[in-house]
Image (tube, rainbow, N blue to C red):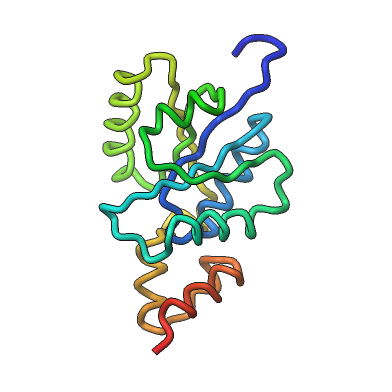
Length: 164
């Protein structure tokens, strides 16, 4: 990083929905960088439960305590988002060793597309390391209690999606 240049990083993800694990990583990244861009991927192949606009809105709602973040949606190559925001690279979360292989492959592909782009890996707090959006959605779809895994606004949004 050049001296005097603000440090900007992109934290990309589907955030379908944003969980306490994601929020923990945002907090960690916000301490390390001047600005963190939360980039919500359209991810139509994943068939998200929430629309991209809903996911962007939920991220904005739950991340208000961080004054150095920006939330945006995207449906292009991640390298483009990094360039558009003048970021040095991306932050990705790794919960377990099983995440590493996939993240390593993505990091190398991104570097092949944009050699200046760095990938940085953060781990969530141990008590959050097992949380995934997929598991939270599954629990919520079966009318299970997800309050330990998401903030109240997200819990309410999930209830709204799974009303029977």
